[in-house]
Image (cartoon, rainbow, N blue to C red):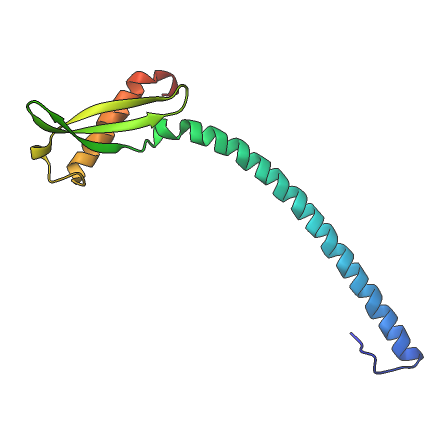
Length: 130
């Protein structure tokens, strides 16, 4: 690329050539940006459609289980809960056992039991999804 050093006909022709090359490169990049912008918009639309379906189905296949301590007349028990917004707002609950049978709410065996029992209950309550 030439600079404004040669202020003669040769310099002018060099600048003219470089200017033309730069204009072509700008046009090419502008076209690429437009194509990428169109693709980006299409991908955003697709993501929105997937996000809606994903959020509706997430609790069936990857439920977020909340484990609570519940007091009854005969002692304290752990209970697993999952909230659903689809197909209708609801909450499933499953009994997990006595508090004294576990080493706290973070006990690995308690969490595994909650996942297993909740999966079974979800399949029972929503068989169409399995």
